[in-house]
Image 1 (cartoon, rainbow, N blue to C red):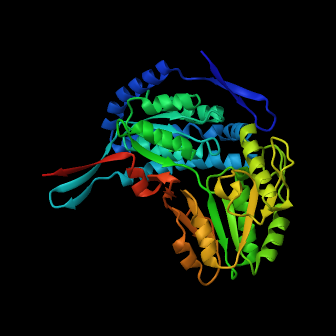
Image 2: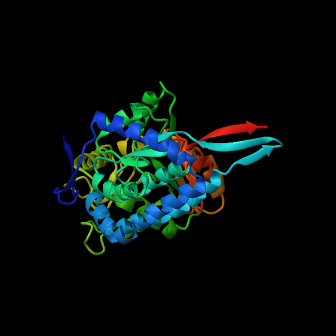
Length: 445
């Protein structure tokens, strides 16, 4: 039986290994999940919530060790790793309670009740960039709805997934939550198995394959498929605030974030000041390993992704872009803070998701031009506009599921995480997002 080895992206050294699931393991896991689902669904929603919260309580003392493991395996600095792990652990109780409230039956007319019933088995295929939080946000509402869950973590971050969700698995009834490891082949086996729903976070290309594979049995789907998020900086924007956000949103998690700002369009009247301020701020960022003090940018997850980023920078440079900071002469595993201006529509860095710590800037004379370029993408996850009067008009024209005006695009409170166009299919978060993990049933009497 083969094992999957996990490597520290900063050193290239192995951190540990997990067993790769075989086709027989997938079949057995689905069978076990099917049996467990019947008993799990018979519990009241309050009982499921209580059971899930108790499972999360078992992780409390493990948070420091889990945080260090996440930092080592994914490459983010220890502060961000601790924030993700502790945040996911604490969110367990909140998500469980919030989902329970979302699944309460409603009377829609006299004698007619709307109910939210379990679907059965939900397969969750999670990403490597936020391997704990993103999986967490999908698993909890699925469980509270009365489903059982089979999780396939990314092959690049199996250890943290095993320790975090394997810990939950051990504290839950047998078969309610299972963790199966492997690459895309294992993910495909789960998609093709006798389950009722797939919740996926990852690339658009893989999302297309999942949708095609799910068509035969009409599996339910919730998919977040990345983005190529634009930012428009208007002539009346607060330049310092816009520059601070532009750098932070481009460099967070080494730029390896689905809502990273990938393309910036700045009004020509303030462009020079904006670009100078961006460079000043970007120069303050430091690359280095997870444990080094004052590190803002960790290693890129693997050599393949490092090559993608370098290829985008080289392509831009070859087509006339101006490198103000950083550049293409960088060796793995790090990409130093990079700022590029004079981006044009024929460049890869505008057309595709770079997924690295690069600020890519283009100037415009007419805001309608900026809006047109911002919308010229198959993606539509998030978008941001910084400006004064007229900013709401610009925001209203942007084709994205999440739009921020003088702030980030993720929303606040219990807002859903939702993409437009080919960035999303379904969504999660909020009461309506939770309900996508259930079957609506109308009972009339």
